[in-house]
Image 1 (tube, rainbow, N blue to C red):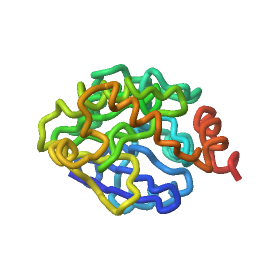
Image 2 (cartoon, one colour; image 1 turned 60 degrees about the vertical axis):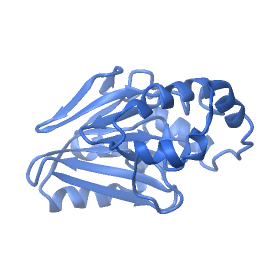
Image 3 (spheres, rainbow, N blue to C red; image 1 turned 90 degrees about the vertical axis):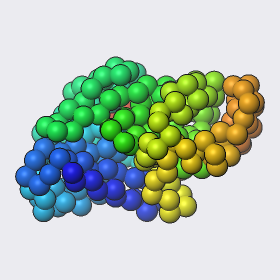
Length: 231
């Protein structure tokens, strides 16, 4: 299997390129628009055909490469059915399968950070978007976020996965590449709570600043802007 984890230093975003092997079909999760050329070069070098591209949610800190990659490769654009994006080809429901050749992902609706947040389970690993971060969780104070929804997504969905499941988030700010469900249960400070009310009180009192790109990124990602429209 080909598994490339790429990091965008400006937004601290992780992008994932996945394929069953050289010369095969590929999919990309959470691309950043400025890095499109790099993704294209990796695909060419590995002789991969990009057929599907997925965003875990509408991002507020960067413009997605979803539509630009579609423009360049004719790949299908995929998000969860709750997404406000106006340019999707496929909207997946909770517990729906996404397949490319020998690769299969299962969608998990994990709202809380946003109402359109989805995670994607692939065998021994789960791509959690911003729902579950390494030693953290996604904020819940904008884009129809909801701390009680986040608690349910975390404690009744993601943390119910096998403990050895690898956690690959959409962001990390401390040079961590991955974790496990077991590690997050034990060490993630946001998860050391006894109830939804305790979690909600913690999340509702974080007093975080609004992402610098939010007023640009959110409408751009809803409209599916491409590089020529952004620049």
